[in-house]
Amino acid sequence: MASSNGADTSAAKVEPDLEIAYSDFIARIDRNDVREVVISDSMVKGVLADGKRFQTTTPQDAGLVPRLLDHRVRITAAQSKTGLSSAGWLWLFFLPLLPLVAIAGFAIWSRKRQAKSGGGAFGIRQSQAKQVETDAPPVTFKDVAGIDEAEFELSEIVEFLKRPERFQRLGGKIPKGCLLSGPPGTGKTLLARAMAGEAGVPFFSMSGSAFVEMFVGVGARRVRDLFAQAKKNAPCVVFIDEIDSVGRHRSAGVGGGNDERDQTLNQLLVEMDGFAGDQGVIVVAATNRPDVLDPALLRPGRFDRQVVVPAPDVGGREKILRVHLRHVPLAPDVDARVMARATPGFSGADLANLVNEAALLAARSGAERVSTAELEAARDKVLLGAERRSLAMTADEILTTAYHEAGHALVALHVPGHDPLYKVTVIPRGRALGVTISLPERDRYGLARVELEAKIAMMFGGRVAEELTFGKDRITTGASDDIRQATVLARRMVTEFGFSDRLGPLRYIGSDEEVFPHGHAAISETTASMIDEETRRIVEEGESRARKLLTDHRDQLRQLAEALIEHETLSGEEIRWLLRNPATDFALDRMLEPGPTPEWIG
Image (tube, rainbow, N blue to C red; front, side, top):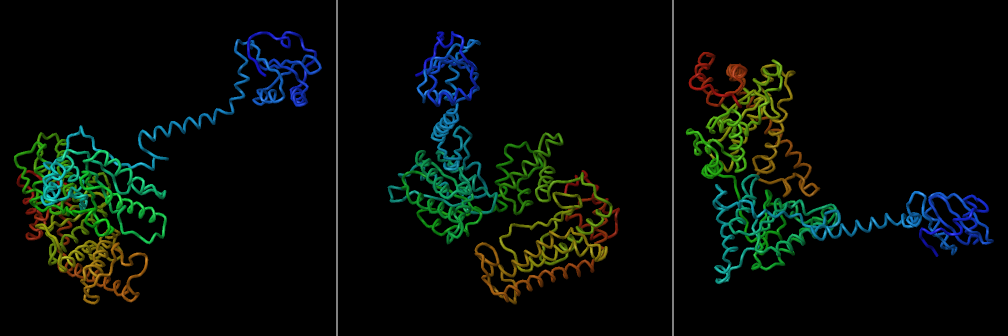
């Protein structure tokens, strides 16, 4: 038995008969030769079985008390000399249990926290969908412009959410899902948010890549959690961005990653079948690659509507610009229609970035309003990249860059079928030492063979100009990206567009856009060799065209290169004027001088 109090005991009051070593004390306990003990700070006094009193100095031994109890020794805890209770010796008995208690407490706390947040072990179980705050200003269709057809399709779904009885009385069912497909930056996410804002319902957003983890089964669990959360908040809109990362064609299950993705997709298919249309849960998904999605995902009953969100045309760009410009103080010379015509190929995100860059440029210069000059400078920054005037280029590098860009520009001007030349600069921008840009006169939705061949010839204009001017041994690496683009375009002409007379109008690439789809050769070695030969032929013909054009216009090449060295940046209109008035520096200066001097931002 054990007791703990401040009373003196007989063993503690009487002087001991002998003092023994601690090891001897332990041995006597094991022989049942100890009858009682009094434990103080670092001293143990006691009575042996034969009645003799002893004392020993003890270390901090957590096993002493259990050993005494096992041998039925009477234990008394004496008051320590420092005023602290010697019950601390008993604390040593429980000290080894503290780590276990701490671990158990942490486990209980973690489980309660996970139950509150819905998360699982390591945070990988629960759906990571984010709900847009309802107190934030809602996005509506007034914030969307330039994609009228897509807006109409989604506005009808809004009517389903607001007044479902209007359609149900005629036997109509609310669509379960809507797939938005189109190039990046065209407003797919904005459309989904506007749909939720118009309907006044919760909006849950999640990326498709967030479903799949390295652990098998996590993605399927997240899908279940997402739809359970949506059903609790119905009616609502669930938006899955980049659904192609989880909704690709199902494989044969060769690898663990594929198995996990397939399980996730299977669960998504089950969940979209599992809720009724009258529950008010609309699944909206967005993708840039609808061609790689599994057919089971696209069938009616899952994604009932498939809406294409294309890049805006000139009218759409004007509407988008007006939306973004309505909160910007504008100078009287700003015309959204003119700027829309000057930005072919721009997406909605590009136009938003253009307006923002123009506002930043105006603020940087201390202007009170954004003018056409800032909008044009911002357009050049989006097209050409940011200036790097701090980059110190040698005179030889500037000369080589000037002839390189002049070669591109001259080929673009003289080769039939090329887009009009827009601007040429030898100011380093982005990763390039110089840039030549051509823009189409109008929106285009297809390219003719002659236009593709003209593009390849223009790409080799810079390299050929260097060779004709400085010799073959002085060609630089500046044309590396031109060669890459020309090779890719030529191969697509052969394998995808059917522009090879030798191979004919056949497609030689798979659904994954590779010449050898699904990891095995889909074409013979002979055909692959022919593809390489035809690609080489198209590239070499483009280089030969560029060489002939520049050889025939050597004087214009020199004149344009010298003008670029002097003025750094020239517009297409200025270059055409210069070539109509050869070898007249005075005339060029006179042409550039009238009106405010342009800021040479390329």
